[in-house]
Amino acid sequence: MDKKTCKTLISNQGALVGLVLALLALMTYCGSGKKWTEVQSFTIENRTISSGHRFRLEPVKEGKALIKNIGIFEATFVCTRLEGKEEVSYTTESHFKSRATGKGRLGVDKTMSSFKKNQWPAGTNTQEIKMMCPFFPWEVKSTKEGDVYFYMRDGEDGTVVSNIILIPVKIKARSE
Image 1 (cartoon, rainbow, N blue to C red):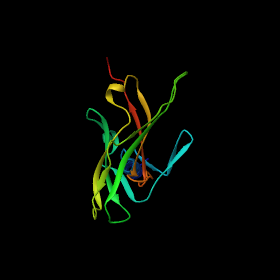
Image 2 (image 1 turned 180 degrees about the vertical axis):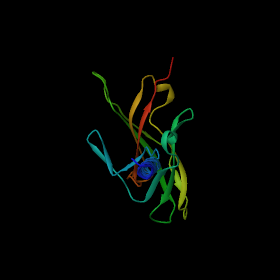
Image 3 (image 1 turned 30 degrees about the vertical axis):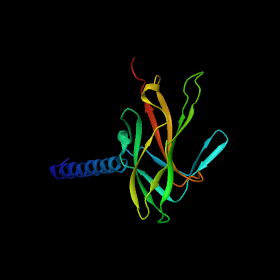
Image 4 (image 1 turned 135 degrees about the horizontal axis):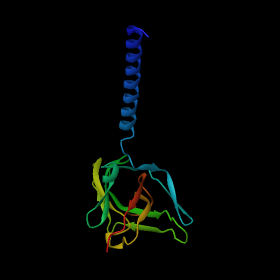
């Protein structure tokens, strides 16, 4: 090979390597650790919980910071009102569905509702809402692995008034 052909071959390979690196960087950026999804419904025993359309929830954090352990496990959401302007009474709810793994392990379904009714002020379009997970740190004696569903219910009639956010969780057992 002469020097001109060799330089062309090296510069073409360099361009190809640069293109591959740029695509990898773009794929890494596009897959930025988003660990949550929005679902239309899920099933508890023989009941289906379907999303509502008055409010929209989106987690404030991404990746591993979605659920924090602050003595209790909780997630924080930005909530946007999509319909109406009046004051609304609501409760928050989360549901944990375990993924049973291994022979003889049972799946667990557990729901936690907020202890009190909250008030969404008239005319307010967006606010931050914190929701607890349906398990506590002192309960975690074995690894918790499964899905947590977060949503809001009407404080008066109990219908679901928000979208449903699904966050997969894997919490390691505490050491004794």
